[in-house]
Length: 435
Ligand code: UDX
Image (cartoon, rainbow, N blue to C red):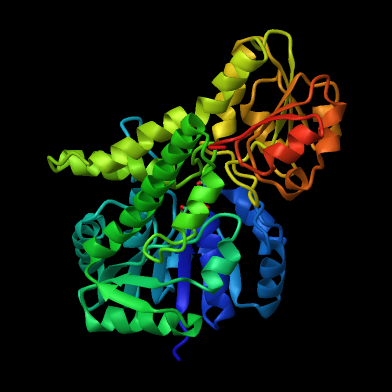
């Protein structure tokens, strides 16, 4: 196996965990970011965000001396055999992918490359982006030195937050989009130690694979959430229906949990970006558009139901259990909880919100009227109603009795964590999704 000098641009979930994983497989890795605070923390072995297993992985990799952190992009890019671009590609206001960070990184890379180099696009970008960026990169590098080999490849990442370390070390598949045997064999070398299927294709197909996968997941979730809504209209149980569906291997049992709708940094952004991209090409991507619309309605379903059940939110104490878009992360991006909290507050509700991981992040974005706590009891005590928005373990492990400290035990569960009959038997009025 060849070991390479690899520079990773961007120390977010994808860049940092990928950099650590590649250092652990024997490469000499430099992680480069323009955010000085993040780099300062990383040099001290402190992860800049919460992700299970990341602190240990960071500590042990720093000890191996194969990982370096820097803001000095010039030297980070000039010494690399492979540069992996893992900066974010957030949504523009119109839904298209914002490639601003990628363009900045490309300018710095073009100004720095001084040896043969493969530039790998790991950021999620619309099909055709990697090929379009290659020509100006080559031209600029050639102006300085005509004998250098510079090529771009696409290598999307499929890790999920909360399991990012595991997903990167044990990937379901490695997708490589490239044009030459040289690029393909370098990337195969890099990923061979991960013992995952390696699928090679052209760049545009690799780029589209990422969007197609995330949009498929979004469609699957919105579909199952709609079936849950039909369950509620018929007295059927979504748990029973999905369990019985899952025996068909074409359907499977994964990604079938009905709930409060999807959030996070990927599904909302990528559904918007692919829809926009298709529109630009003159194609209306109806299934994905429908998934997005269903999701917007789904996010507010329980809130409107609760408003009716408890006779409005004015001056009521509302317990919110969980703020993040899923458990295992401190990330609040597009979390369904946020829209619910704004609505409840606007209707005069007095919210006490519990979350074990994101209170510092929440302070920056949630209105100061919302009391934030890491104490479940403080949220539940004397509450008029309780919402569950995140499937945190300590929420999952609550007993029906724990809800009896509320003024009136009525629970609106967006994660289907409890059995309604058991709750009712113990004096808790319980509403969930699709039951
Ligand atoms: C997703 C993809 O899973 C990952 O492969 C891709 O690389 C990035 O986007 P992530 O955004 O971290 O990862 O979270 P994911 O676990 O997919 O969950 C997304 C949203 O769907 C969350 O809000 C989650 O709570 C919700 N979800 C997921 C459900 O409501 N039910 C499910 O069965 C699964």
